[in-house]
Image (cartoon, rainbow, N blue to C red; front, top):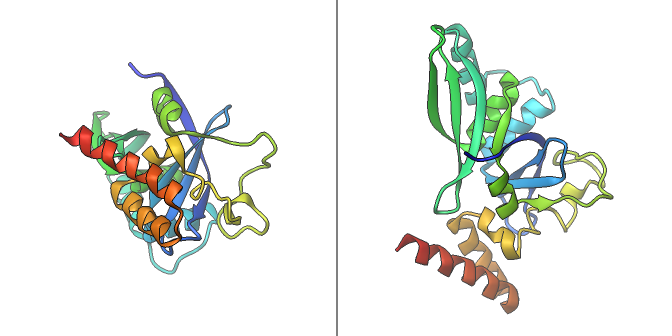
Length: 208
């Protein structure tokens, strides 16, 4: 049984090198390890709308799902985030039905987070996963700010998403790593390209 670590959402950052690539940043409660998860634009928009309490004219997809759960008296008890062998993060939703039955539903981590912040459900992961791919926050950092906050670490050229080098490459999907590899080669940053290639080769070996 894994040691369960509760996570809190602290912000969204974006990749200034590659347009359209975002990451949601989760941090352990009462700790300084952070888990950056690559997400798409629509999921980033949905999460940020809720974080900023932006009123939208029509319900977003995650708002619709929460409304359906409420109408059918279903409760999201918790979200469990884990990593697939491919390196992609996934999630299990533990949902309680109107009859009190518990069901586990497979979901993308981004969708799970978007729903959890709308229902107030806790988000958990394992201590092992945080040790493997977590990024430790600097002790000098102040409270996290979401994307767009002036002078925040999330908008600097040293954002967490851009700092996912070395051991933290394992937090990125194969597709994202391949794009990073192309960019590194274009910039003639062959040291960076070599590190990314090592991670990709390791993934291919694990799939055999």
